[in-house]
Picture 1 (cartoon, helix red, strand yellow):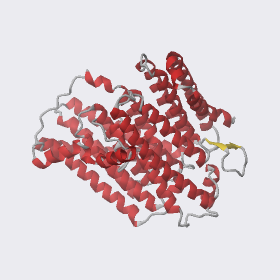
Picture 2: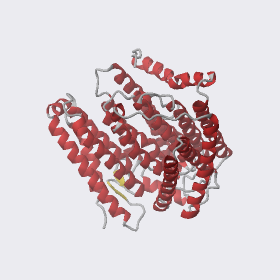
Picture 3: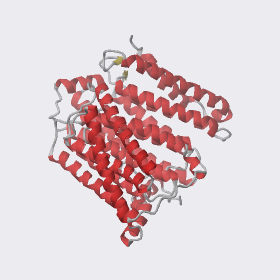
Length: 529
């Protein structure tokens, strides 16, 4: 049973057509817009779920359809493989949840119709991005996603800080658009086509326009830079923790959906990106560094939304690091799990006001050291046992060793915190949770690797010295972060820790340069947040 390409393309196009609705009319008909957006997004989600079921039961791993002039560059095409199907179902589900939440959240808002209009456009653009069959089309949806998000970020146009941060994000996004446009131009110059099916066929055959061409490295680096801007990576990250003065559903959509655009770009074009060790090393270093930076700042924030924002920044950094290590299937798993978690976290962030505070037990330095030692031994044993039981592939590569180290540190922290409570029941729950997390992680990796075995590269063949140095540097960084976290909890009154806390709570002042550039371009001084 084949899927008509027109049906696949219809869902995002119908949603994007909401741009034609005048905002003033939408606000007057807010109840109608609310019902229409919920109905269309629900129908879109159901359609993509059905398409994905059909695709997964077909023999072909990839399916590509196109219509229009076969030798033209501007034809409309659809590329719907298992990666696209997973992303489309994820986006549809998260979008449906956010729309359902917005149904009551935005009720009574004077600009409710405007909100639902641009929510439909934004979700349609994201869906169009993941099913695009050529690079020109992908670029158009890439830009439209950013424009629609800008409209949502400026929902409260009477709030100076909301408008200011949206403008800063707008400028950074245009820089990312420039990187992507240059990369696409060079791809056309080198391979003569932007059709994904034709490009992937050329990559597999190793024909004309081989990977030995000197243009390959600049193309891959430009793609990585474009992805870094979309996913709020250092030094393009300052807009993410500032764009919080917006409706909660917008924050959920941004942190659980749009922010994944950079990772999807690298995963979609992984057959090309994986051929440049320089681009991979850049992705590993910047992604890993952003992950560490976000983790340090996260520990000092008191605002729930700020914590979630820096958490997203750190998680996206980790996902970028996975792409840089060539673990594209693992990065796809990370996108799926992070989207589900972060949408839930933002939509329930308001409950923190009435939540009962958790009283942390007083733990001495020796007790903490004992808990960490036991936690580390237990985490190594758990990971080793799960690897043996699931017969998961060896982690002898640089990527596997670094990701294994991070998993050990994460499980050590989880088990140590549960042991430090002094409650045997909580300690057992902590170990059980570590077992469950490890099992889910390796099982999902095994399943997804099998599903994408003919789509995503699982080995890096072009590796340089920088490709091996980057994981070592990031590994040292993660160990340092673990020691820093221990120092903060054990010696909070030491002057060095207190000074570091002051700098970290202010984001190490990296946003000052972005504010100055924004002020220079918009010719307006930055308002006070």
